[in-house]
Image (cartoon, rainbow, N blue to C red):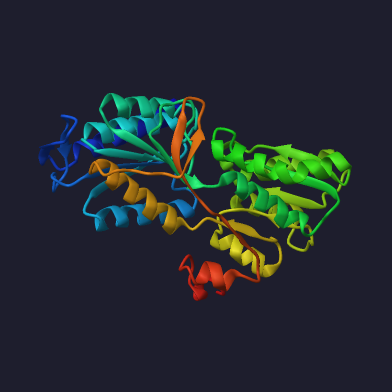
Length: 343
């Protein structure tokens, strides 16, 4: 592990050394190591590109920043918080004017906020909240509502019996929001005795392999049946399908509207998913970043407490997806083409 981390850091430093040395000093007194140095320079620190949805975020944020007249550099840490901190340092040293970050770890990412603030750079948490830090802005979806929709997708098919909840990474604060939302729906039914929550486990790194191992181990070691599954995202829903089997009528929900999940919904092995229009999220995040960097007045309608402050927040509405509304949502929005969906 240490060797892989060392190699990753060496690679990052080499990449930094290859930056175009066209120096223009930003408002914080740091030289911008980029071409067209007079433009706003946005740093985008991504947790990972292992899941397909994050490529869409990357492309949409980059395109919108450039459309608005800025430059942007994106680095992905592939789930390693130590690497992400080093990437943030590199972006700061290259003279970024604003940092957008999808934290690898919602708690320890507060170090990234401190590093940015020490350099006079404001920070936008993208999709995932950073905890216990004087964060400047947070833009995401109403993730508690996402969890409520996930639970309702499953419970609309099974109103009583044994339910399994497959949570995401506990290091991702969104996973906590999703579960909280799901429990808003589940708890009254648990209290009434209609629902038994027989499996309730977070999944390290949102790993499909770990989720499969955990669920399979539970079923092998317990003489119990499962009547419905709520999975915190579509990757974990796919893990549940692999364990339960393709020929089942057990309702399974997910989130992210991944193409594989859309195919499972059409095939009947996944009941539904929650669509979070990524282009809307990305466009608003890029616009917010450019407005902040340009000194424009910023207004938000709500705040989210992160343990340090009430963070000015933009929270977008998630959309429930089932096989009956795929065309009017997923296809009409351009999330996927008709050919991709029905291939």
